[in-house]
Length: 213
Length: 213
Image (cartoon, rainbow over the protein chains, first blue to last red):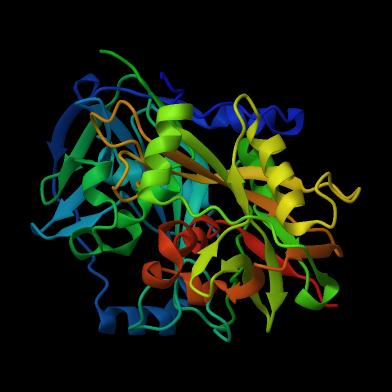
């Protein structure tokens, strides 16, 4: 009773391209080099900070990256940890007029590359996996714009960023970069928050080719 | 302080096609006609049923459809309700060797069209939004294959099915077709189960054009 556990390609010719994109390679953690650099200011958007920021600049739009590595034959998500208890996907706030892709590349360079302006190796920003809205300053995040909310205060878009077979991650000293198994973050709102704990579901349509090192 | 609440297109030319697909039309509930037909057997896969079925046929692969309509300017998900308390996305189990798309079209015709072999109006099966695995007979569903699980017992794939501007839904008399707001199903595991309650997150990357009737 063998069974096929891979995503099988659909037979509909119209969706061949989609199906091809549903499979991608992930590489072992030990393919990557991890180093550190000087600390960068950590902005924890507290309520008062968010109120002031909205008054000055309007809705906050953030972009975040899902970066995966293989460890113990299971996909692991790369998370930044600050002050021992705050976990986030690498990313940050867009500048006015900046595209999602440009903003995410800039933020990834700032938080994960040796030089702010990148180290020559581009980040491959892929498809948007999901979006989260904050309808008001103190409310939870929602994966849709709730009815009757005309002026949401925050929008966070999560993108898949495919890693090459090797690269350097240079992380500010006030942050730690962790590889956390998908099975640990799944529905673990309490520790990781809504966005991270929902990532396994957003990735569920993909089949991962775990490449041997 | 007006703000842009739509998904803005990325400026990366490589992803233009992806971005175009992130927007689609949904039509008001009153664009559709709802009728009924003779009951069809309802298979509630109990534990003993699942054990016998696995012994005979191996892993159960199911396909389900996300169908959306507009009501009160908010997207609503079409759900089948059986026995007042069981909710499911329209769909069902694949036959051996059947493709996801063919199987889902067959199941949609059986549960939502006037004739088992369809009514001439094809169902537009779109992209796979997510997948859920049942590692063992009694376990929860997971949006990934947990480490060390070699023989999962069940796999359910959820597809986006875009509705045309009008069509007939003819539902077996032992089932009810309901339009439930996304904001009601979101994270409501207890009432709707894991798959349905996660649908709003899987849809979060899309922007809906709500067409006026």
